[in-house]
Length: 184
Image 1 (tube, rainbow, N blue to C red):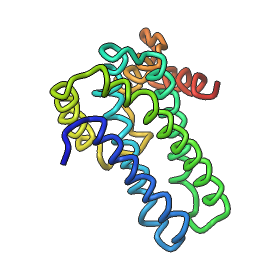
Image 2 (image 1 turned 135 degrees about the horizontal axis):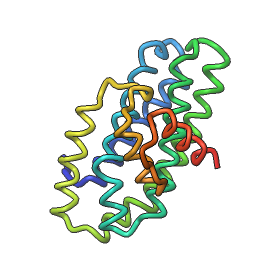
Image 3 (image 1 turned 180 degrees about the horizontal axis):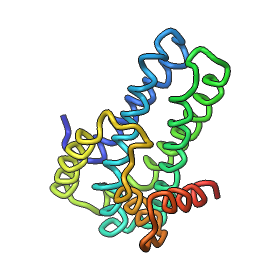
Image 4 (image 1 turned 180 degrees about the vertical axis):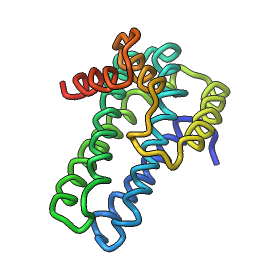
């Protein structure tokens, strides 16, 4: 298995796409599989935000793309939290799942065409392997968490990744400001 962070991120992306297909095609598995999707994406996002995005921004020169990707994470967190609240056998679930799939697929496509290639070309193999280990460790620590489990420090990190001054805002103020940026 590759330790390159870009390969590990893309591996997660393929896993999420597989989960999307299963959720769309097999409604009978939704009750058990929705929490898996939500917690996997939350852990993936927190690991990228903590370990990958700061390096992509500062060392690989991907500041604009990282800011945009961070805003997409905020939107995905919101949509995933809403999906988790839906009755898995309802039309509301179908509609929300379609929104999640659209938003996350768009994010994956952009990240794989901008941020990740920038990291591949501007960071050497050893640095990407180092980031891969940090990404996996962080992702493991966040597995099982829901989007609403995000801490104030993690919100501050999201704000930093998105280029938003966090100042001394409390958790709710940070969440609101990030949501406003994600809605633009």
